[in-house]
Length: 382
Picture 1 (spheres, rainbow, N blue to C red):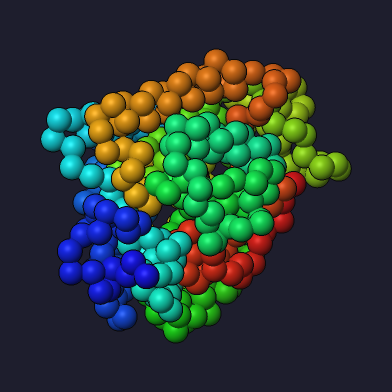
Picture 2: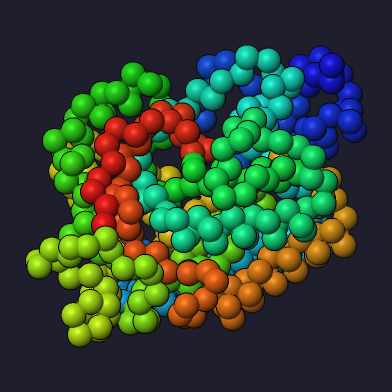
């Protein structure tokens, strides 16, 4: 057995090689940051200054005068700048290695540390993507697999449950199972003990029904999907809508008379888009904080994204040519999205997401870093 625990020298045949994940993790390890992001932290590139003690989402809304066009512009600027930053890192002559998540690596390769369990318990409110977004994510995962040719590794976390497609994962690329996909609307806390999370759930219970059903009455749209990436992961990101034509399937009838749904009535989206996804995040934060629970989010950057893949090895990204090929595949996928999915009515794929469609917000806790854990309550969908 090629065990990292016993290896005295690097073994090129081991799935960890050549990264620095060979060391055994201490059993009491409870990191304060996602190991996959360590050294590649989610920097806010919007230029917005957040004051300590304030609702952090208010700062961007105020800077944009609450206007959806300006809010969309900042979300777009953030993800574009980040992709440019990460592209430079991938193609730099000083590139060293990808950032491999040692927790996920051990969960997917049990021989590294038999019996290993993820100790990091978290508490979040997730938005769950509707079926048409999952179909789009499935296509993008297929495109990414074609760019990572060593495709013989089958994920331990997704065997037989990968939704629309049945993907075999590459040795380098772990794909998020479709049924586990999520977008974090609010991270209450992370990397805690199960007992600590249970105490927070008890404190939050009075507002959980209200928080999880917020999107039912306050319908925020996300549009213009794009692949965003860094040295540890790949995500499908969106920006808040700002007057674009409604493309999503209609809500299940009947539509309550007191609910304004995008595109209904006179067909205008201007008024509805005034309440953006960033406003929704602000309101979720406000309600959660009203219970006295401290909010310990790792980041509050202007990003609306679903993680769809993480790196597990270096084989497909060792040479400059391989890395250039990988970046080109991502950029080609983004060009396809812009031409064939953005603002395209009646196309094969729909790139708009009205948050709360099919499912309300998901109050979720446990070891959920890779889509696991348990649902405390799912809000009403439409």
